[in-house]
Image (cartoon, rainbow, N blue to C red; front, side):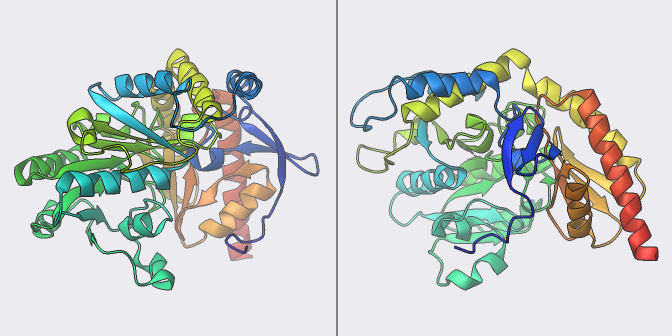
Length: 382
């Protein structure tokens, strides 16, 4: 089905920070499958774990126990500060769907509303699409499900004004990824936490794109000085294997009872084997620290390029704001020059390299961008 435009290239192989297309050409990947392959492509530890599990046990129903999901849940709970429970699913949208259903069950009859921010992105299911604060994406699928309202990003007064007795939860990203790489401030997130506490609401944080080291902390909210009630994640968790998770404090998670929510493949052995191996490498490599150091280096280098107005973001989730609405053209030129980035707005490019990216790879990527920006400038003046 034509849900994506025709692909400009077809990739057939990957290793570390590099991809190869079906013509044998090599590309430096600064997008990581939209912040998914955070350990790089074909990481041997993850590949070996998948192969071993595939020869051992691929799937059983969640009516029975299996391994290694328990290990993954325990690790995630520890990284999130403890005292919670985890529901496994297959994607970020499903993780947010779980969070929305959990908020409704926790709130009880009559308390079903979820407030999110304009510019947000929470998924493509009908519920998560309406939670997404991009009204243009809603129009083709009206009528949308009830219970969602949107407020201005980074505006505590607007958030408080939107609360009424029907609201159960607030759902926010610590850094809006698809919305343009817009970081939250500590003051905003701390203010939201205080409002939720005062009004008896859940504070749910969508870490699908930001979680597991990318922002320089294990989770983006940790750098903002808050503790949420519910956290969703996916993307980097399997380093390419489809898996998502919704974590909630034990008190909130207890709202679910057997039969309230389920998914056939959630937490199945192949996916959780990949996640267990991914998390083990992430901890061994201390990927949050690596993301902080590499992100600061990359920000400085990008800010010095001609035609770059500013660089925003946190850790290794960055956006280059260009002087003009030419992000799509620059991304196409970059791909032609062997660098994968993407236009996240009309005027900004998103960069999300592997968390194991090396200084030499960063230098290579910046050099390609410098030449591409010069080429784009010559096109415009010539």
